[in-house]
Figure 1 (tube, rainbow, N blue to C red):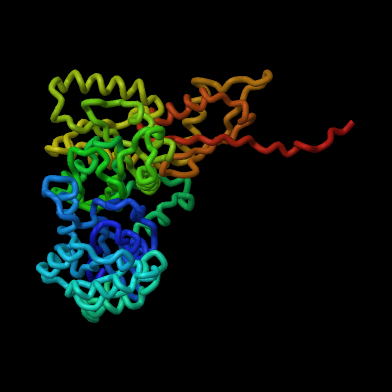
Figure 2 (figure 1 turned 60 degrees about the vertical axis):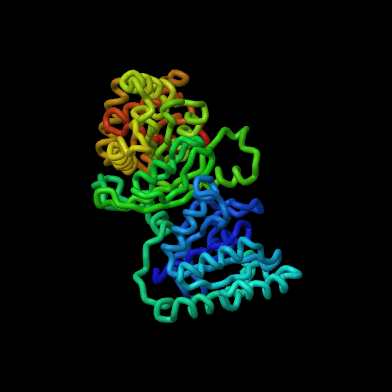
Length: 474
């Protein structure tokens, strides 16, 4: 992108609505509740021929530096310093407040270009608020309606005037977006007899999920080496799913920080429901999911439900036991965690579990190696010839059951896709094959082809009978 723009303003003036309008997707959570956005969220914006990076920020308020609002303000000020231009959004419908005047003074002191945006200008009675915006001393306000998309052409012209035509229309190489990666990630067109080599240079998408206050944002900040995400002792600080990029040993890692996921019965507020839905979308979009446990209170019921959800979605899963620096008898606790992992998560046999400390950075390299190893298994593809030799051996060791005096025959096996590994077996009487025999085959695949922890799907298909439906001659 040619330049970076930060959207700033006090709470509830429509910054996230404008962000969603510019990126063309509903990425940021929007609600009537003030202060929904807390972290700064970047996105790729397109506006009438302009392409640039846009940053959504938290509403600026006067607050103590140590409070949650103070830490949110620090995140917003960091976005302003990072950006080349600021869109200062005011509410034309409700008029100016003393906070708007203070923010205007702060932006003037920064010495960077500012475009004054009068949002909600379509509302009745908004004229007075629009003309009041002139008193801020930031030039002529641009009237828009972020919700209805009005005034976007005027906004583009104001941005071009503020940043300069040469900068605004600078030629840039087209970047590969997340959607491009997502659409190119299919496996159905590959040759089923080939076992492709794992590409350890391809960018990797990782979602960090868990209960509130498990240390997810702190963990990502430690990976990045900076206070990129808002953290603190309060539970439930993160609301949006925020993505950040960094390099680990030459490989691009895109991590998604998500809101803490509580039990469904406890989620009653509309805003929390939106946050959880956003976290679920991040899980579906990611390739590997790290479920962060609080090592001081591990294996709560919600922890187990989150792991089960991730596996049912078909994602590669890794467990991270965070806050390891607070554990005293580490050997005893580690042995207990291993026993509980095997006993409470039988559907994820062999799942990688790593003790870490997001606060100190201990164990993070081992966690990243476990993520890469799990993704390697998740992408694994096995040739049809090897699978059929294996299937024949499995039937000799443990033959399928007999139904109505006739034994079920497993005739042919092939891998239909990877990510996660899925297999198709052609057999007789597929509807009568018991679940226990399917588990026997899945466990055999895990052991014989070194496929721990990832979900494995097996689909059975009955062979067609060419004489079915034909009358018998008498």
